[in-house]
Length: 219
Image (tube, rainbow, N blue to C red):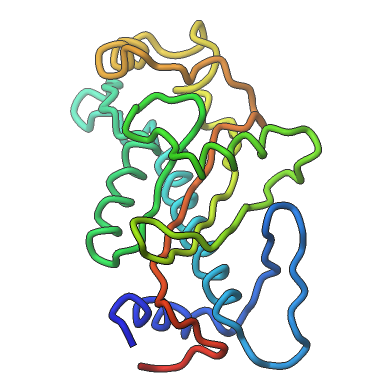
């Protein structure tokens, strides 16, 4: 068993207790009523949990912006740029280095050009924008990148009230935040959103072995 499949299997051991319905496009996949957990199900569950974990990290940073940016001495507000997206990018980078699993925040409208979608992600993001696409449903596919088979997962992300501090109408964004954005992201395309708008997606890419198991187990 390869090192990368071991990673998937180890995560799977923590996820077998609950299985979530997977989707490819907008279609539900029906699995056998037997107790066998397929690799596809395990990969879906892993990707979904990782996406939720990253979303949770982003939410925690978002709702604590006042604490993060308020100085202990004097109590004045000093925007530090430690936003949900900035923290999320660091989490993604460190996680990829330690596990080989790639997590990414991406969108069709960019603030940070480094988060630009690849062709697969762009296709999915365009699907999310279609009015008949079920809101919140991920898109998944097994594909090949540089000759390596990978499991790809992307889940849409929507604007919440906390997001408006940096992504709302420009006239409602603090002047110091606007100054920071203009300095660090001069080509920013991500203001003017409203609560509930599609912001982008969280993309997960998991390397998998050439031989896929029907029932994951310890190495």
